[in-house]
Image (cartoon, rainbow, N blue to C red; front, side, top):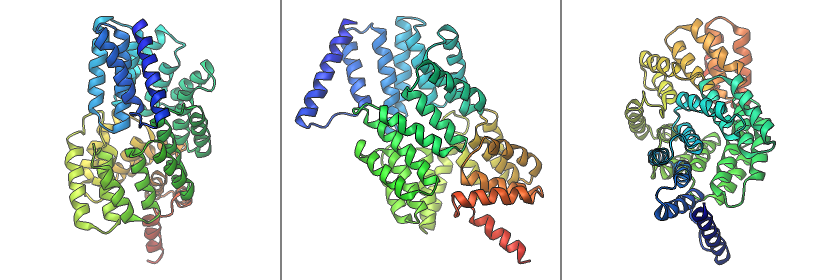
Length: 415
């Protein structure tokens, strides 16, 4: 413990000196990695330092988009548990890493085990809430999130979990309120966390059509954590919503220079297509398809986008349904339900598609694409009342998303 205290004192002193001299600080997670490694250089058997290192490495994965940090975090946790088997902090850190790796079923099982041992640990309740939401059990996710707030009112993790749930439920104003509260409680040196929250708030403003507000938030995020890939991705989506497609292409190309994700590759293909770069867009879609297919059976996949690609430009409806069914076997969140329903619809299995899209809509989603899908599926089952209701909701959120269906309805009326 004495060594850790000394290291923290030295680190704090270094930060203070950097602030006084105007020296650029390393990113928050990188600072913690260096501090933990300094401890381990002096005391290689201190398992607590390995736990701190693992958590910092997992945060570094989000800072950079480089998922190899998760593998390093797993190794650090392995070292911790070899030195001190079943230490609570090491097992808790492992759940945190599993959430980052999207291994939600394993994360939930391990979190439940920890919760039985120590039921008043706020972060474990938070991990349970995140995993339950990802797996589609929103009632249990809500219960876990409420326990976070009951145990420690006003804590930042509870606000962030609550905001994410409210977004899935379609409560945009409630989500923004929780994000704003979390932002107010975020320490000044936690620049990546602040940028992440600001970017999340910008996404909600974009979905609500408040483009100027979204722009202002993204500028703040860029000031907090320059070059943040998540901010760049959201800015690219905003530019597409503003019909500034060339700007979107430029932004996402720059973002993809470092650790491009499957989602960012798909976003580039969409931006290129929107900007009229047909040949380049085709090549980008093919590159996305190749990489996405190689990870269909992995926890960290982009199967929803792959399903949407195959039901559209890729023109492989049967393969879309196969992938959607496989993912549905693992998760039941609103995004997976939507992809599964849309794949069923594309294969003319309208009744089952309606059952699945109804489950997604019942959560309360405020996402225009899902509501547009719901409108098409309801129309296919002959429920014109529901179809018109969903279409109206989709148009109010994002008129452009609903344009294909509006055009189809206009064509049908003209026959």
